[in-house]
Structure formats: C-alpha cells, structure tokens
Amino acid sequence: MTATRDGASYEVAVRAESALGEGPTWDPATGRLLWIDILNSRLNGYDPATGRRTLRRADQHVGAVKPRAGGGLVLNLRDGIGLLDPDDTFRWLRHEPVPGRRGNDAAVAPDGALWAGTMRYDEATGGGTLSRVTGDGTAELVLDDVTVSNGTGWSPDGRRMYYIDTPTRRIDVFDHDADTGRATGRRPLAEVEDGAGFPDGLTVDAEGCVWVALWDGAAVRRYTPSGALDRVIELPVPRVTACAFGGPGLTDLYITTARVGLDPAPPLAGSLLVVPGAGEGVAQPAFAG
Image 1 (spheres, rainbow, N blue to C red):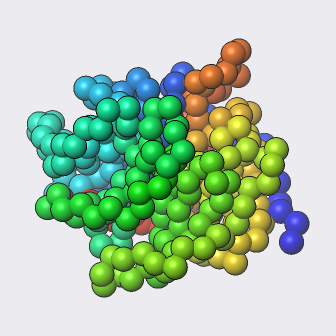
Image 2 (cartoon, rainbow, N blue to C red; image 1 turned 60 degrees about the vertical axis):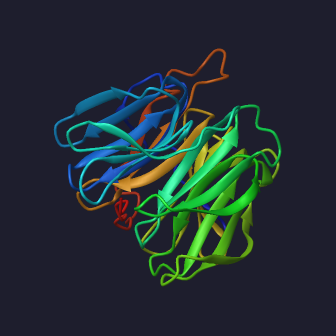
C-alpha cells in the first residue's frame, strides 16, 4: 500500500517555544486541548472556540496531564502521580521518587486506570517502567525493562492496547482484557525504518488506525490495524512528539512539537499544530481517581 502524503495540511494552533511539548489531550468537559512542556514544568490549555490559552506551572517536571472523572487533573510527575483538584489544590496519589528518573507519557484506559510511563534522565537502557494505576492509587508494575516509555492507546473496542518504547523503533500491540485491565501477548505491529525518525506519542482513531508522532522524523504517520502504513502528514519541524484528536467533533488532529536540542531551531519548533478534519477520533475516558 502506498501512503498518502499530506504535508501542507497543518495550521498553527498556538505559536510557542516549548522545550519539550508533549501529551495533547482533549478535555470534553471544558472544551480545551491540554498539553505540557515537560522540561519547563508547564501545563497548557487552549480553547479553540475562543483562542484563549491558559498556563500553569508545576513544581517539578511533568510528563503527562489527563482529566479526572470528578473534575481536576491527574499528573504524571517526576516523583510520582499527583492530583489537582477542581479548586487547584495539589495532593499526591502516589509519591515514589527515584533519583535520576521522571514520569513520561501516560494514557487513560477504557476502565479509567492510568497507564503511566517513566524513563531515566540519561535514557539508560531498561531504566524506565510502565505501570497501571487505579483511581485509589493502587499501582501494578506492567513492564520493568523500558527505556523511554511513550505512546499508549487502545482500539475503539478496547480489545487491543498499543505501546511504544521509543528506542525499539516499534509500535507494539497487546491483547487487552477490558474486564481485568490486563494486557498480554505483546508483539510488534509496525517498525519505523532507519532514517524516518523514532516513534513517540500515539493516538487511535475511530477506524482503529494508529497515528504516531515521529521524533526527528518531521511527520505523523497513520498505521492500519494490520500494521500497514497508509498516511503521512509531513510537518515543518523535526521533533514531533505526540498527537491527539480534539475539537467538538474530535475531527481535528492536534500535534505537539519540541525545540530541545535544535540549534538553530525552526520557527515553529515547540508550537502546537493542528490538522483540521484529519479524521475521526475516539472520546477518551477520564481518570477514575
């Protein structure tokens, strides 16, 4: 199958200079797109209806932010999992600092559990983890030999889970049991070839296709459930970090980017980009905590 290239279809949603923009997430309760700048400890919000942008600083590096079912946010932080209540009060759900390690990408499963990844600051091989954290703070270690834990997502029917450990260059797939929350049978879905960048964050659309951001690849790719590459969106920045569907109909693909390590950095590096009408996303569950 020949992939369709759509390099000119992006727009600039928010022009910014994020060092490491990551983790776009649509919050339907507020009609905002949430994302973070990991290295500057920033939580960002953007309302496409008004153009209003909000900014809040965390007290430490933050790898992911997701809405909570009862209001507020859950944060995958350097030292564990934190909660922001609707009144902006912070508290720890799980405080477990590990020297030299921080939280990275995270995602909420269909049952409301948070799948939270970690990595070493020095990106040491096998120094990261992937854990499943339930609403009461109970954590189950799922993978303990991860290097850079990144994109995680589920098929529309919840029976498959997709996962990326970036240096492997693979998008992996698991069988997911919606009743128990367990993921088993890990196997490769697709592999990003040498010279095309490294897979980073991902999202899954209503057709069950997996959209993957390519770090140092200047693109977002879409893979079918069989692993075939069928679409490429080329972008003006090399370090594309993650993507998510948002907007009232979940048809707009929001894309985060980074400028860290780029000298000189392209003008749009670190900005939030959007591809209007890129496809149809799936409503994401809120964290059950």
